[in-house]
Length: 384
Ligand SMILES: [Zn+2]
Ligand SMILES: [Zn+2]
Image (cartoon, rainbow, N blue to C red; front, side):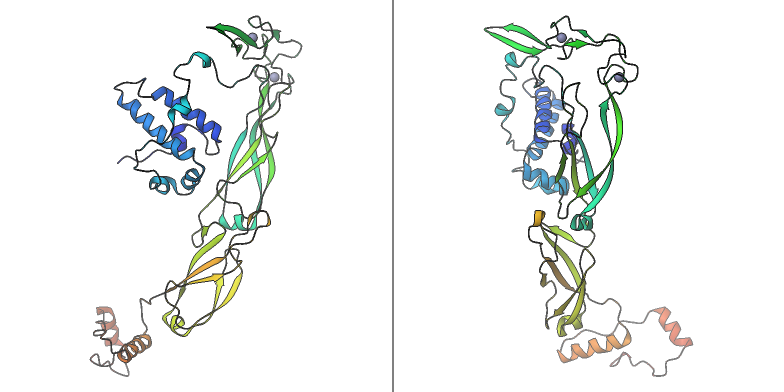
């Protein structure tokens, strides 16, 4: 089977895209590849199915969060039947196939447009999510062109009024029984047209600039959390506000600690002797604290020990989670002669047949030959 494409890639949106952007993008694809418009076109049918599947997941807050963490395999089980379509297309595409009232539509309003939101992903380690961290992030964003003050017109010249809309930025069209107001396409809704463009920004009114800022990531953040700075995104048209700046957090997986909400889970190796006899152990937490714990006698492998308050911090002062330590009895794979003897004695006590001791390798036989043991081996009863 071919590798499944990334859902964000299928919809052509950023990982940080909001619900509105995901919906808009899916709508565009659904319209383009809808079977009603592409009868008999298998490639289009496939694209339609693919986009619908991606939308099903990304439009659902819970499924999207699962997908962000675990990819396709994390959400495959949650989609009923695999191919079932649960998206209400009528609701989503309502009116668009009729087309009449949405012709030339879109949500674009007349007049100066506000700046776009700038969205950036910040990858952090789990330990940084536990402690909180300040990150110095350099972003690129659009600023007003300094040379023309954002007008786009060469200094000393002025944009001229749009002739098509008379400087209104909108045109009124009579459609059937209705008068429909749409943004003027000649001037892009601006009302003015730059005839002599600024050389610095080529009439755009904006230039891309770099800016470095300190982002304070609070303790307890998780993948999918967002930090938003209002009015710090791309510059808008002259007279319109800047967009927002939004950081989306992605927490990397840890080799040893697994996160479950505010709880942390880890495995801790113990020996047979510790399992049987108990005794103090020292467990290291994610942030490096050493916690002493008295292991009870007779603990079973995979028993879980709870260390209260040593998990992830809660958000906004909420209670800290717990560290769930699963003790795992670590079976030794190489035994010293003394260990071999003691384990065999234990087996004898329990009246368990553990078979004959392992045969010596050629290498150790050679060693025996050149460095003779003071107490020669008696393999039948005593392996020493
Ligand atoms: Zn300029
Ligand atoms: Zn116009």
